[in-house]
Image (cartoon, rainbow, N blue to C red; front, side, top):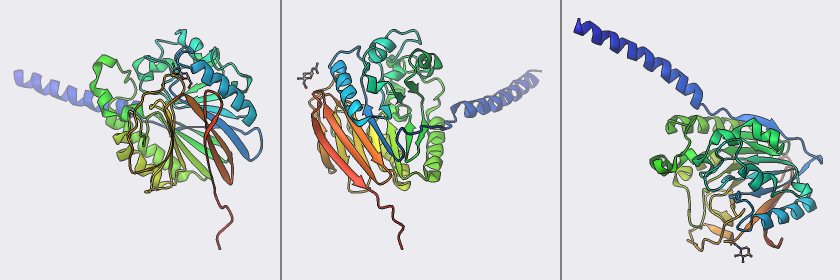
Length: 332
Ligand SMILES: *[C@@H]1O[C@H](CO)[C@@H](O)[C@H](O)[C@H]1NC(C)=O
């Protein structure tokens, strides 16, 4: 009798295990949704990139916002990219959190910034209700808002691959006091391997002239957080194998442009949206083209042949400019 009971329980739990594995894999599959963004002007595109910003206007956030408005006007931008840490200190508490208006809608009021804002999540966003930031309710409140975990924006001459980098960082999974919202991304290894597989396939199939990847965390950085080892180990090989041109991130509250000798990928940090001036600089063996420890933002101007990257401080001064061209003439 006892024996039979155990067998029955064992059978039942095998069944339950099979069913729950099935459910898990469908929940944690990171399908990369693709969105088309049609350009205002045929064959050219411009945009601004900002990160680490939502502090209700404080720490120069408002000044950064008004300079973005001016530069955005001058460049006649198509859209804005946010590299994450959208709302400090702990994301949004829900879709009714006033921080959404106080840190976003009421700050970036310039006419030129009334465009789509494509956003990823940062580690601080994970400390709140992640689903609130992803919710269509926010898009109804402010039509500019567009935040997903990982997705693709196809802007004709360029493809932008947005990657949810927070779950990569192992130490965050061992910090229960931060109350990270791991719904839909747990278990970590499933989520990450599905995401990397989907990203690799999407990059490989892409026929765009320019391939840009965006994540919250840096691959290379000389500031306080430095390189993100999990991204160096797991994400970077995929970017290298698929001819990615630029990797853009926030997380370190500064502006950086780094080139390394082992690939043509340019590493661009735009994390100067509000609190900055950390005062840490750790040189590495890469070629450092810009390190500005204060507030500011980045611009990208693009044609099929040429990319131009610019960095600005809160006074609108050009801190750094860099460009590269692609020879599109067929090789004989
Ligand atoms: C605001 O920007 C100015 C100019 O860069 C800087 O001197 C000041 O420290 C900044 N304020 C804060 C709170 O970071």
